[in-house]
Length: 483
Image (cartoon, rainbow, N blue to C red; front, side, top):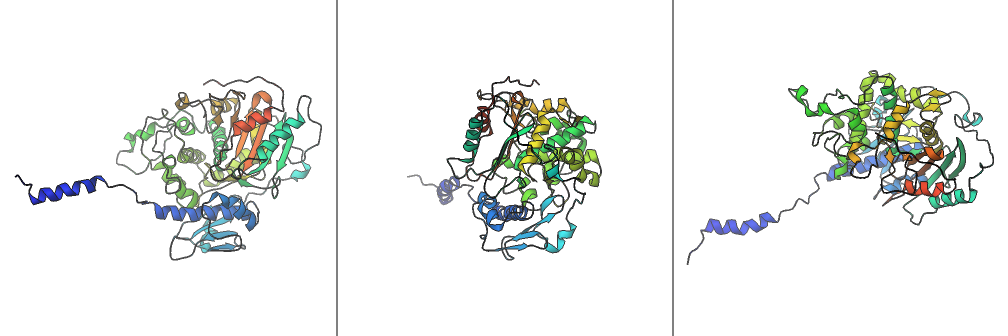
């Protein structure tokens, strides 16, 4: 009988065990725990000091998004500094304590794990004087004075109320509608709020912020300070000895705004709350450095992949074009917000002073209705052109990378997908986590705003809402922009 050497027997016995090895350990566990604390710090801080809600409201709605919030409204392992307008989650000795502090003109800023409340004064601040005038005395849409008038002929009041009930009376508790506004022919024809919410209540836009970002960027393109189809001219990370040969130099602004940069996507690979932009959103890292530190994995413009960092890179290009840190912080108000009466809107930054315009904006429903009206009016406000028709055509034009998968995305705006035939094809929409939508329907002269604090599986559809609202209005024509 032939016998295997002892060493061969040992090796053969070891092979099955080696083959069964699996990568099950979560190496980002501690990142996730720190970010979980940071999420709560930001949401609590903004809920209390930007939205002016009570602790009970914050825990019942803002924090319903979290699986395991720290503490309850009655107390827990957190601290609220009412004088400093700041929140700390956790206590020393384990997961790093995460802190967020309200800053005038910007909302709450997340701090680094090694910072304390003593560092608050070093955080960015925007002390621009508020827009003059009392909005309660200024007629809509520049102000909040709304004249009551009968609905226009052809508008079905019962169908409009039914659409509103459809939005508020959901068959799942995970869809929590806070507000609904319908604007027709420039007039608010329907406005409704959930208990505890009114027209002044500011909540987070999440990714609806991306559509605000592309508006500001478009203004710079219109001025010739940015170019849609030229290389970005960024300094990529990590630094190399031959930056001129970096293939990322081919990426254009169009590629970023179409979510088709070709760069490695962090958030869409299940890492949004472990690393990537999550570290900037919730843990005090730089949004700019992380966005620039990704390798190219596809040819730019060829593949659609949703990524917060693509928006943040475009916002960084905006900062470079402005080239002055003070002007950069003031630009959104001077160029857009003040000019269309968006008095209640705060665009937040990371602790380095870079706008997190992929998500971190706090505003109310009426300001978003004004924003939608700017697009409905083809970029004109009060007889003055703020945004070119060409730029509006761009954001409504399907990204080339979506041609084979439904033509559902343009330039930081969502489009009616090819498989929807029940709503006009010219409709387009912002979309943000937890149900933040601004829908513009040019062929029906409509703007629809829905704000929510959805949680869990979510799934509220802005296109289904549009279908329901349209039942109250007469038939119209639809038109799809061409590329």
